[in-house]
Amino acid sequence: MDSRLSEHIIKQYLISRNFTGTLDAFDAECNREKVRHRFQPSSITVSLRDAINESNLGRLTEIWSSLHKTFFYRLDADRQQMAHSFKVHVFKTYVVHAFSQRRTSKVTEFFNGLSSEFCPNLPEWKNWYALPHTPDASEQPEYAMYFTKTWMDILSLSLTNFLCALFSLELCSTNVLTRLNELETQVSNSTDRTDKPPGLPTTSTTSPPFGKLLDDFNELGSLRPTAVTRPRDSQM
Image 1 (cartoon, rainbow, N blue to C red):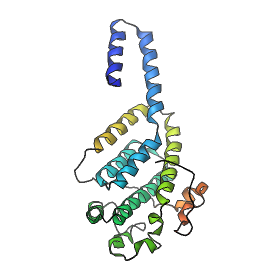
Image 2: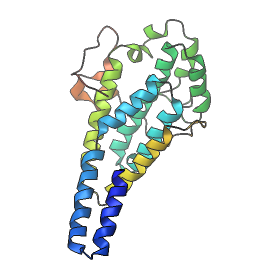
Image 3: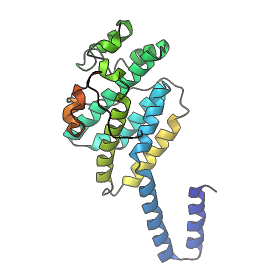
Image 4: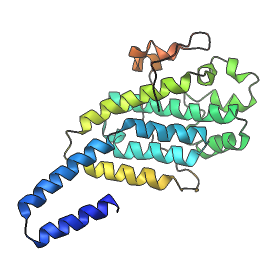
């Protein structure tokens, strides 16, 4: 039986018997259980990684938009800048993976569908529209880091750590369960979406150097194919 249906039946029974004290205790216990199980950044990064591996732009866009609308938009300026930096790296990773897998239609879909969000006038994207036409792209400094075998693991671990730090602050929020319900619903619904992906929310900040953002990972922004080191074992 679905857990939500079970909870509803139990609550209706307690209400019918006027067991208000037991009902309050049951509600509190259910809320603690929801928080404990839903604050799992690794689940979110796994979903993002799956979308990248499958070249599912609609799902990737929906998950990130849901994160923004549920959590990121409320952050202070510094953390919003960090979130924006991760967004740039996640979507660059997506397009490089699609390109390396020779999924030409997916690369075209990316640049056509998100041209207003990731326009070539932005400093972090000005050279990326040339990617499909660049010989030996994996050897070019602008793209090389994203082609390395360890990059996906580095990004996964770094994003998971960022979400862990963010979610630890959210535990003190009184409406955290409401936002978690919204995020869970939006991410679940995105699985079956086939419509053109909507534009992502924008920020006015530019992304900081990746190494500065995550200096505890040996200045990741300076990595190149000859200098990549394997991070601690992690799962996305």
